Length: 392
Image (cartoon, rainbow, N blue to C red; front, side, top):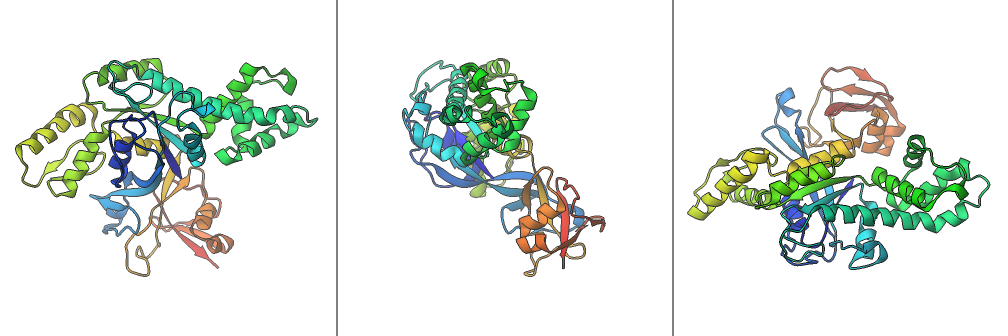
């Protein structure tokens, strides 16, 4: 799974990326700070099952704090986007190429209105324009791809029967599948004959296809600045169909750094922190501001909420623990070392194949580690299931 971080230059993308991953990347307030895409690991947060079993887990990947398990997901911060990217303006071609493999987009918007559409410092910029131009550029991207094949496709006698397959093949590099296409045709009565499709209908189809195959969550970053809350409320009213989450990436980064240096105890996504070290006057003031202006007002910095929403709500993944019915540790003695993310609707057999091809090929049954109940290959997995796979 790959989440793409998108936005205009200097919209706070790099700050968000570092807050989510704590990797060493450039952060600066000028256009195109990010030139090449940065790849890193973020973490979604779930209740660990270790408390239920009365044990302390030893994760092989990710980590666990206070019975909260942090499961890794891949993030990609791409070069800043400017209007006209779909025609190659700015770093448009590189931007779009980088995003082909993303499963979902996290669009980071400077909700303070202090940078313009090209990432330059300004005052009173309308952040709704940033949302509109990104939607427009992405839709044009899909439309241009569609038009490359449309002329030949509409000449085919089997247009109606093979439409979904042909479109999925044309967009295969963007993770579009036949079901994406079929679901659109079920929802909207597009003409059955290709020659009857208007340009407006083609653009509409391409736009819906993009939304289904590359869903977007909007991040209202810099929520702690002067005009941010006012702009955030305006965005919610203007785009009621979109998920817009308030965020302060700078606050998250500051809290993680303070925790790293043992000045505070902080669990990502929580609404508070505990001071554990000796703080200077400036450090106290900075932490107090984060507490009052961000955590108390919004319940968190927003960074963890965004990652969790993207994975569990937008992409509808679930977490699964490999766990023995009688033994929770692996051969090295690590307790509950793994937790994996699978698409909602996955079965016990899907999980077996996910773990290893041989497990799938030789599958006999699965056992629920909690109840010891035997489960067949068609058992639909539930979020936070703990299963043992039994093979021949």
